[in-house]
Length: 329
Image 1 (cartoon, rainbow, N blue to C red):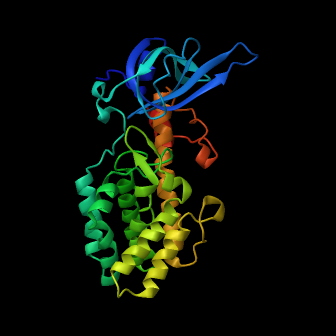
Image 2: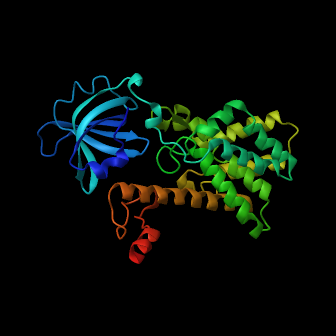
């Protein structure tokens, strides 16, 4: 049973702790200016990740360990370059019988059943019965539904937790439904269809067990192309189905990343595709912002300090609400 989580690090600075983690990365590195090798690993649990190093006598410790396995470690919590890390004294493989899987994978804070029913409710109100048939063909598929309800939306960047894909999509659909009336050029049913299906390929791109990662299909094909294939299969099952709608939905899937350099095979060319790209990007960035604020809190940063550099956004971020609240106090 875990009694120390990574989020607890500020309370245990300079203390020696013993706990269980998932080993998400493992590398043997050369020490600077010679002097042998050391072990560099990343430890994760449901509250976050932490780098750790082991300077000596690590060969036996890692003999039975690999990335994705559970480990029991003992080490001191300290700071390096103003970030918490653990200096390991002991590390060993941990059997699944020693751990509770719920301690290791982060889970959405929202009720999955309620989000699922909300999503289905939007589809049930479609005026376009062909788009309604198409989306329900996905949501009523038992294999797709089970994965959709549990999958993360990403390995690391945003909504990287169990139920993250559903949480991301439901939030995105809420925004789409609210924004669409301001743009009469946009077909609201088509926009929501794109929002629900744009990331459906992630249920096969990613795996989620002891940790999050990419399947072989995800690495070689990617979620955009996987989703395109899934769409073609469902349209074939639904024949007759309007070819015009198939093309427009497929375009939204293929263009939702917005730019070629972001992995988008096509640029958004329709009102629905353009709005989906912008709103999807906004929703993902806002969750990345929340993640950065949470990490800054774990690191003990003050309300007048920016977060660490956020690589995906190419900038640090600043929590304006915390800053104003502190100033008022």
